[in-house]
Image (cartoon, rainbow, N blue to C red; front, top):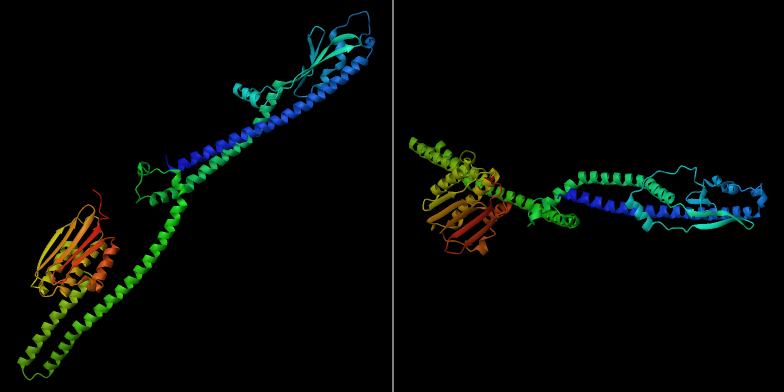
Length: 461
């Protein structure tokens, strides 16, 4: 069950509970009002009946029976009550009976009653919980010593129940419509606004160990309740990440400045002295006394020019390997190793490349190229002339890409060399790839550089 459906179901249950509470509250209030009206009408009816009975007792029999020796019908005898005048008294039945207990008249004989049907279960509920019976009152009707009949005042239970149910429904109908509108409105709002929250929770729990319901993309309400905690944690992570980004930017600027200083130093040291030598040889050509001296200086200038070309090419390779776009990572590393081998003929290099680079972007591959490049540069600087064997391997698995650069040179003390520019730059580059680097070296035992990079970005087969 999705989070949206859970919330809608929870709201529906809560609204249903509130509606049931409102229903019973309305029913109880309506029952009290109707009951109060029943009691008032019952008391009024008794007072009216008492007054009529007193009037009947005070009326001479000759008026009641104008022909003393002729028996009149009981209905004529009791017509003085005129019960039709009491048709408007609700919830109370006033009934006349003759001396034989035969019903003669009622105040509701000619009144059309409400024909609202009450369900049996509702009627039982009303009778058990909201109906309080009123005992009927019977009074004899006499004139002098002559008994003419009786009058019974009783509560009209059916009328009371019908009015109670009708008034309850009349009050409850707009309440029910209001509750339905509120429920649909809340469901609509949830459908619109809960999706970003669900996506957010899914993203928050993406890297966590989830139970089976999470792995199927389902969420419990407890995760929504933990949302403030998640937001607080994300706020802290954002602050930490912001600080890391700022530190990383500062390091990048520092590395850029270091690289610029390094290039400027090499330009000054390498190209500067070669340009000075060219200028010197050019002056010799100007003052040469014979062709042999001119030819010797020209050959020197040609050699200096080739050296400068190699220097410029080496610098350009550090900025961007020229063969990277054409031959890819493997070809670029192979070309770099060949060039390095020419400059270090005493070294024997073994290169292993067993890696599947499908799905790995060019930026990551270039970073891997730079790691190998920095490893060879480190060997050039610190291995000394004693280096005879260098092993470079780049191997990939389903999870990791492993790069190893191993030499058997003179090694170094890592406690003194670890903060050097080259290794520092390598560490920064590996950190940017979410990888880890291991350095193993000691004086006289060569150096081993092992880099492990997560194989993110590889396309799934």
